[in-house]
Length: 188
Image 1: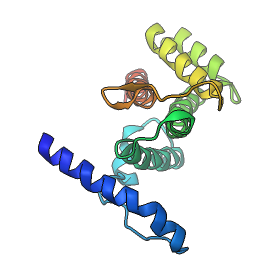
Image 2: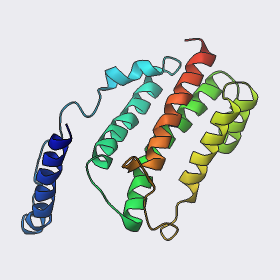
Image 3: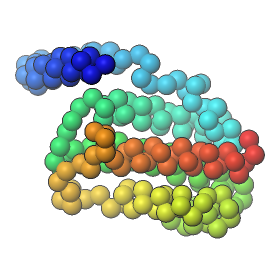
């Protein structure tokens, strides 16, 4: 398996080195088709949220499709410095948006929160009403601060864990925890 990884890495690096010059010379899009199976279908994703209306579940599924595309690129390309930090932030924000949407929609539908509530109060209220654990509340606030706190000059490198962007992977893990908590609370 490790030998295949090295072969893929070397082949992809060769293509990556040729692309910038090709793109400069040719104004038309290269038109390479995105790999099938990387982006999950809406129908495959929607059942994850039985407590959402069909319309909301579809919107969340479309955002998860963007996350699928972002995950593919994060696992393919290595981008460093401030650009890499901003790229990881841009890939992580849709995951956090899904979390916020799930919490908000569930909270409003179950009359646990008032419409228009901000994320900080939403997290605290859902924790106080027993939907979220205190530990999950802490993780959600950390992601909220990450979403709100990125600045172009604050960081010079992307935090990595096991060769993968740390904050993106944390957001995905927290999303799974939120989904489980909402399913448990909803009784679905």
